[in-house]
Amino acid sequence: MNKVVLHISTGDETVHKKLIVQLDNIKKGLPECTIEVVVHADAIYMLLADTSKITKQIRRRRNRHMKFLVCNNSLVGVNRPSIDLIKGVEVINSALIHLVQRQQQHWAYIKMG
Image 1 (cartoon, rainbow, N blue to C red):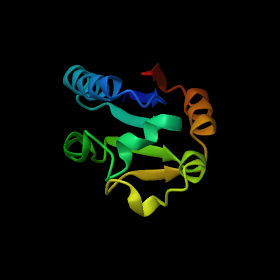
Image 2 (image 1 turned 90 degrees about the vertical axis):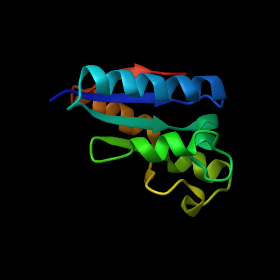
Image 3 (image 1 turned 60 degrees about the horizontal axis):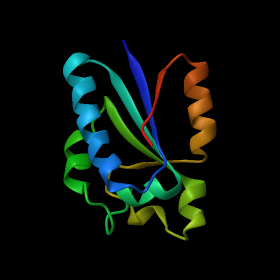
């Protein structure tokens, strides 16, 4: 089974929308692919329930084969608790360490912005 980790750190909403398109493209071409979207830095706002412009798109896509993961260090940096996240988003300790581990496990890595 294919495994892909997408990395996004930008607050640019245009990139957030492109991410959704790319997720759909991957799932269309590789329906059984496991996908993780790892979010940190300014991109965390796309996963906060009160600031996200793509909440509905995220909710529709998260399932057992597609996860949205947010960096706890980034949440702490902007003083936001995990309860502020869109339901179903998972918190990881460090986005960068998670990305290193996934690459060591031979996941395909895609940098989105």
